[in-house]
Image 1 (spheres, rainbow, N blue to C red):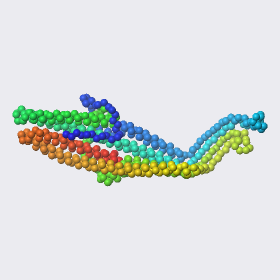
Image 2 (image 1 turned 180 degrees about the vertical axis):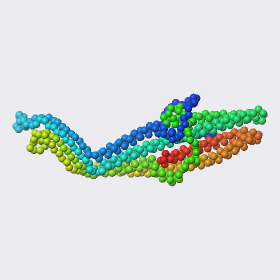
Image 3 (image 1 turned 90 degrees about the horizontal axis):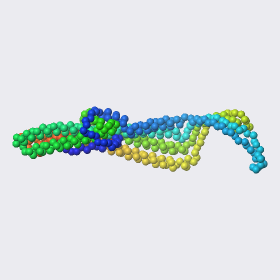
Image 4 (image 1 turned 135 degrees about the vertical axis):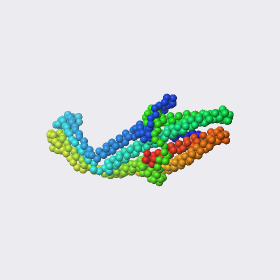
Length: 442
């Protein structure tokens, strides 16, 4: 019997070093459907939790950027003691005359500024924050899909091992009954002792293989335990039948269209390109003038702003339009604009490379899925042939017209074809989920 190798889990389930699961003590089996395992795995995954917090922070940054449209209002106040003001009428080294001053001064005021235009920087900054927030949501969705794929693979691997175990246990029971018949034939002198020994050896190998399958079950079960946040001795029993015929696959062209529209990598790459475009517009905006409304109003004491001065409290206000233009920006900003243009060109190339990679992935998983579905049909035919061959050889052996090797080979072939059929059905499911993840529908 071929050894079944477990597929490597994608990123999304971190396997921590853990003690080996004891196989001696029986554990209560907990039935889980794939949807239930997905729900617990998503809730337990730390990467998803971190990315969700980052998304929440990005949403707050968007709200913060929107507040830049509001007027800037500041209030200020001051109080000071003014020193005497000596006047050196006869030179620095002679006694000065003292000019009378008011020794206390204070004032309170309020200033306001409303931006009307600053090279569209405010709107561009808001758009950048929104794009970043959208990218964070897409990254969270992609991580969630990766986790679901990893859990689905582990779930199906566990189901496959359990199916293997049921098939092997059934075969062992059949082999034990067959061994009893062969031993009876030996007692009657019909067959040689070597036939009994070969049958016993075959049964021993089956029991050893059963131990291997038990270990595979323990490994796959622990992977799921880690994913859903349960202790290592938490036993999971997968629910739901494996029906390869239930898998409905669209045409390759439609799958590729869906991938270009919904694949998370594609959408993230689009947002990254859009973000670079906004950054280029913002860099060019440094050439533009800034225009805004301003107003201020102040209460002060004493009045020394206008002549004649007055030792009384006064108020004073202004309002108008303020405009400025950075002349130096015409020559200091051109390198920044050029660098941003180069980064945008690089991102456009990376975006095209991402689309090519998605196309390759969809094509690969689509072909593998078709291959797996074809393997199911072939395996079903092989099982029927192996059943008939086993029946014929079993009859001929006990009628003394075939050898023990023919009987054991027929038994092995039947078990092998049943394993291949079960494995092919599981492989259809695995390839289906991998295709859905590549398309962006998982």
